[in-house]
Amino acid sequence: MGVKIKLGSGVRVIPMDKKFEPRSEPWQIKKDAEHFFVSSVMWWQTGTDLLEVLARQAKLDKGTGVKQCAVYKVPLPEDAPYEINFYAPQVEGAVLVTVVEYGFKKK
Image 1 (tube, rainbow, N blue to C red):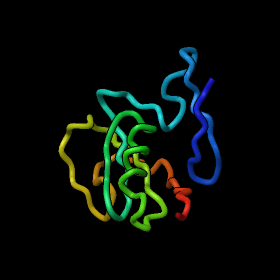
Image 2 (image 1 turned 30 degrees about the horizontal axis):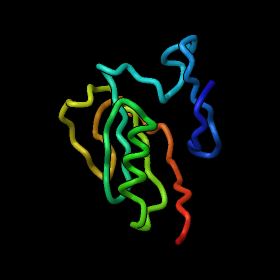
Image 3 (image 1 turned 60 degrees about the vertical axis):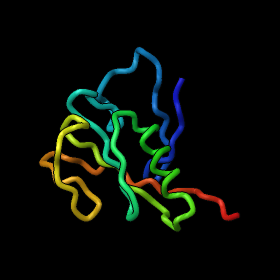
């Protein structure tokens, strides 16, 4: 059982069963020690649940003309202070996981 999500150049299935090996994929984190930072040229969001953070980001970006957002994994707790420059977290060890392209439909 899993959830399909378009990440980067393809579709990936995020496993949701309890038998899944923790930390073997970039969207899995240590909730008290890491978080996701998702940003576009308009907004940024943080959180420990990647799908929830992407949903919030897409909701903000919809209708603005923004076509994509970047997903970073930051090796700090979500409430830790750090600098953000050029839409990216300025933290040693932060990793760009992927760039998500939106599929917004024109009205």
